[in-house]
Length: 147
Image 1 (cartoon, rainbow, N blue to C red):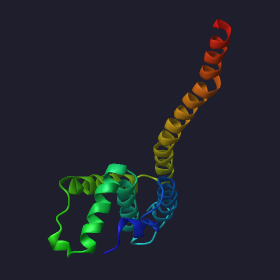
Image 2 (image 1 turned 120 degrees about the vertical axis):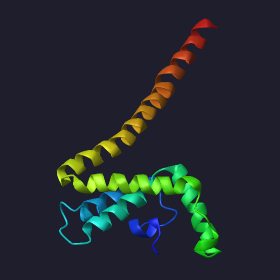
Image 3 (image 1 turned 30 degrees about the horizontal axis):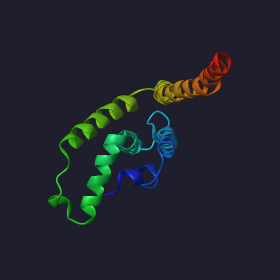
Image 4 (image 1 turned 180 degrees about the horizontal axis):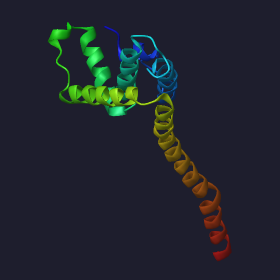
């Protein structure tokens, strides 16, 4: 059985950026609206499920622990964490929804998913810039003028 890392073609030490890049590429390749192969839908669903697990730090941590445990024992001896079944079922339902969309609509949705992360990064950058280049110099000027 292939791991989620293998399905996305990334290493277990892959960064979030590498996981997103791999997902985006494979989702475009396997979306049933683009790829008319009989197994395209199944491949798309597998890629989405892997992305859903690996892109969320909490889920990825649980998945990594499960992989480590199964490396030293048979699959039957290591029960999956309680939330894992919910996570994979939710990912499968979402993958089915995305697979049923036209590729153009899915691309828009993909843009929304990745834009949210970009906007959050941009907000943090603006706050850091404001602190470093505005607040600190103003405070230093205040100190100089008051003493």
